[in-house]
Image (cartoon, rainbow, N blue to C red; front, top):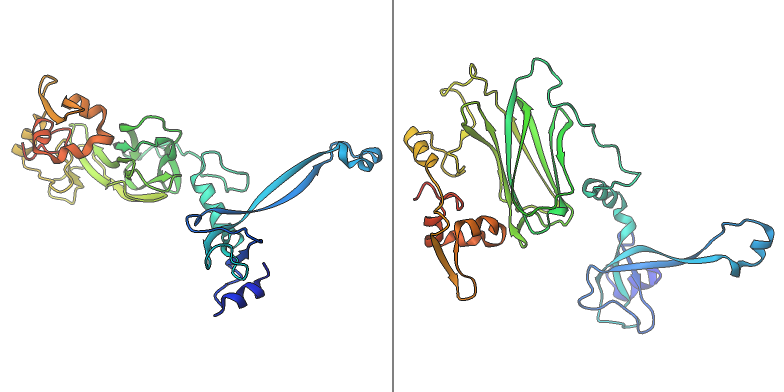
Length: 326
């Protein structure tokens, strides 16, 4: 529908031609419940594999293909299929640059127009660099294939993961140079890893040779298409650790971010924190019956909420991150 006509019918100069378009036909329109749906423009193309004059004379012998291009997204309108008030759509061409950028950011198979990714840099490309052991603890939601992530230092990707298949808790160990670093996690589904399809999240730690761990970054998984965590990789060589300096927060084995207590007695208590044996159970409901901590570990993404109950947290304190309380 021509912009001037549509804008005049709706009045008030409400139809912004650079970001909106109007479309409709007799008794045809988008309606309530269609918001976010596509508007396609279709056209016929002829595949001319044989350019001879005889072939061009007989177009019926050539293969015809109907092509579709999305030009709009259902936005709003007045009523449904009212002749004077066609549907109003968001104009896709107004957001082409953003769409392409998001496709490049989120695609595991990037189109040709995407800029090249930084090449994977060797983790230790400086012979004098101090390397630190880094551990990533992450809980994926029920759609891990949507997730990819990478570590970056000095504007170069040093470690990356995509094509993930396993749900639930996973652990990754790498070495990074001491100094600034970045962790970027992407979700092609646009819903993060918490909370509609699992209680996901992640924590990043540095580990020294004595088995001590230092929390560097934490996320509750509540983001949309991407999240970036910037942190500093500490120098944990034996001659650089000074308890009087500004060290990263030290974790107590079960990594309670709200209580980083370096008291030796508390550390000893948490090192002995263990979940109950498989013969110790807790009751869930009439259908599930009695379960144990091993079952909770295997199904943690879906049933993490059970840790809110005292009976479960007291029997599975390590699993429920409740060692400080039991």
